[in-house]
Length: 190
Image 1 (spheres, one colour):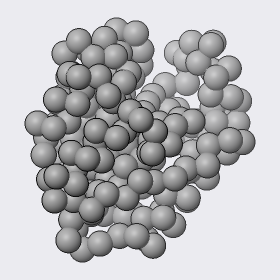
Image 2 (cartoon, helix red, strand yellow):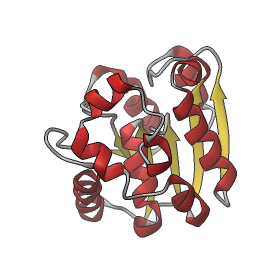
Image 3 (cartoon, one colour):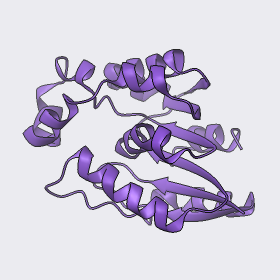
Image 4 (tube, helix red, strand yellow):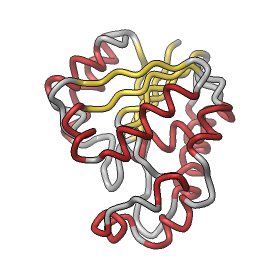
């Protein structure tokens, strides 16, 4: 049995409308879909990864895949080597690593919060990418790359440093997993 875990972005739920197409598509492709619940409020990435690991261990199947969007992609990326799914899909991997903090825009820093920023200083995106043993597909939107240059850098650097990863730049897409171009790009990976 093939199972795929969908991890939403920051303050989102995998049951939200923008993920409905993805769930339906993956079921049609023969996957059992696990919508990962994350408790976002007053917690950090360490908490999110522990919550996901527990959910994954409880619900995993023989063949497992993980797709994360934005902060969900960070969770998938950080936990991949420990959980060892067959493949991870990192959609709009957030720049949430120590290499990214110094260039963070003030409004993003306020939105993310000081505890999450302090937490991100504890991990290196470069080191995680260099040591990644799980096959990965890294996607980001062309428009979101212009709007969030650090996200573009994080995605491209991750794909370049990882041993078995490829990058997919989604034409004309913003930071929106339900954007028509983004949905088409994801579908092309399955």
